[in-house]
Each structure stands twice: as C-alpha cells, then as structure tokens.
Length: 415
Ligand SMILES: [Zn+2]
Image (cartoon, rainbow, N blue to C red; front, side, top):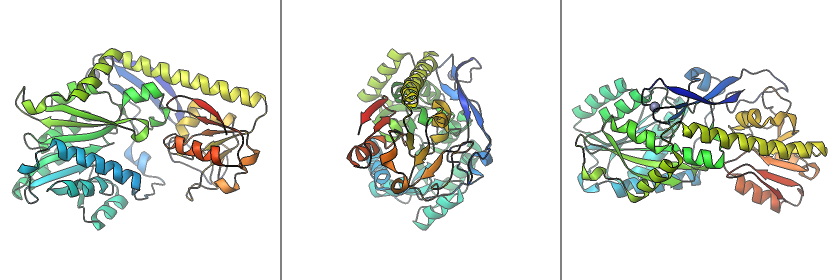
C-alpha cells in the first residue's frame, strides 16, 4: 500500500477452492489456489498477492440472490444515518449533490442514503444481475469496474450536468482491489473538495483477536488496519476523521475520510473514538510487520485448538458433522482439515443441498434429513451467524451432542 517492495512472508494458508464452489458428485476434482499472507515491513499492511483473474472468481457458477435481508437493511440504514450525521445537509440538494457507491450491488446502501440525505445517487456495479435489480428499484448504476480512468471520465460527465460529488462509498470492496493506489487516486479525483469518502472493511484487530479464518477468501486481498490506511489515504488528500466498529462479518469498521487540499483542516480532526482505535493499534504495533506475526500466531493457535478437540472426538469414534455450507467453508475445511473428521454438512440452502464440498465426499444435507440425533458433535462452519445456530442446537431436542463455535474464541457447548 505504501509502495514499499519490502514484504515479509507471514503465513502460507493451505490451497483451497474458490469459495461457494460445490460439486454434483463426490470427490469431484476442483482446482485449488494458494493464499499467502505477506506483511509490509514499512507500513504493516497485511496483504495477499495470489491475485486471481476476475473471470476465475466470478465466471463460473456465479448466481445472484438479492442481498435483501432485514438485518443488512437495518445495518445500511444505521450506516447512512451516521454518514448523514457527519455531513452538512444544509449544503446539499437533490439536483446538484451526488453520492456514488462503488460496487453498489443491488443498490441497497444508496436506497438507504436517499432516505437520509437530499442527494442524487449513482451506483457502479460490474455484475449484471444485481445491477438490473438496482435499476429496477430506481437506483441507476454504471456497468464497470472502478478505476482512476473511469473516475476522470465520470467527473467530466457529472460536471456537465452541473453536479458535484459530495460522497463516494465503497463497502467491502476496498479489500478486493489489487491496485489500491489507482483506486484511491480515482476516489480523490471524483470527490469535490470537502467531500466524504466512506467505506466498510473487515477489521484486522478483530481478525487477529478472534482468529477469523473465515474472512480469508481469494477475493480478499487486503486485511486493513487504520494506521497503514491513514498514512496511505493522506497521500491522496483523504483524511480519516471517524470510524465506527460494527459486528458485520465478525468485526468490521465503517470509516469516514474527508478530501481536503488544506493541511490542518478543522473538519479533518480525528474523533475521540478514532483516536482510541489508533491507540489500540499502536499498542499492538500494527504499523509494523508485527501485524502479520500476531495474525499468524492467532490463526495457528486456533488451528491447534480445533485439531485437539476434533482429534479427541475422532479417537472416541464420535460422529462429527458441520453446520453451514458457507462461502468460507473451502478455506475452513482446508485450514482445519475438516474432511478427515466429519461426515456431513447441514444446510437448507436449496442451491447446495445434495451437492458435495469439492475434492471430498462431504455432502450437504437438509437439517430435517440430517439425523441430528445420530451426531455426537457439530462444528458450526457458518461462523457469522454461529451464535444463533448454537442457540437453536441447544433448543433442538433431536441433538444432544456437543456443538463447537469457532469465534470469537473456540468453545465447546454441551447441547
Ligand atoms: Zn507498506
């Protein structure tokens, strides 16, 4: 991120299939890809360089289901409200003020924002199905990936319409791009002076403290902390001034940066909660390659603990199942070697029932066909909603075994 070539290898994760790949027959061979974590010695940025082609990531089997869920809607509504509270609504109006969302998906965030602020909105979304859904719901979206070249063209078109870009958002896409410099340059180019860039990211502090192996997808190339990010964004005249911790994906941050060409702009002063997060990161030395070492230590400890639990169960001939054919399952399975312990994956998703985890005989079975009463242990692989699943298993009379929840720390619960 700081352009330094001085990278330290922190951890090589086992090769795994692209997330959300399931096969029709058992033991079907599917290509695996490496995931190696490096840390920048100069700024502490944690990153992966095993960049796959977009077509490999999205080309096959890319099916779209609208992101609509009450929980996501209330999250984005909360987020839009925060953005409204840090912006000056007096200076906005629907004709001339524009909010642009990069990777806008089906337009949900912009729909929430429109309810909170008097602005015109525009999405940028390369995937056809969510873009069509977005436009159907009144949120226009451009068919493109984001780049500084696109930003330059867009800015001219927007100026001709007499508009200014007051907001640019990029939620959970800032970790995916393999050219962060060009991405940040484009954002800075698009934004009007004093405009706000807001973005949501998985937070490295949570990833380390909770050993969140589930966030390591092949699409996720950066695992951000604020210290390296702050230093990086400043070089594009973007100044972080606030950040809010949220519980999305096991622990995430909503960050706000203001574009300013003036150094020491009062509006760019850091909020108290942002200063506190900086202090936590400074104590952890996340602006050095200590960040990668802490991450390695945490993930390896989690792996050892899970192996210890599963090895004990296996030595007693206990029957083990997994709950959740999640997108993270390929990585979880590779990392914890799940194929050598369990027999089934429980999940009700109709697109996955009856299919197999690639390169394995682990079959996805509906919960009511899973013979819960015959299982001795269920490891919850759907790690994001794990607490809800755990409570259901405790209440379910058919299951009287042990449930394992991986995060924030690995616990075994007798159901
Ligand atoms: Zn760096």
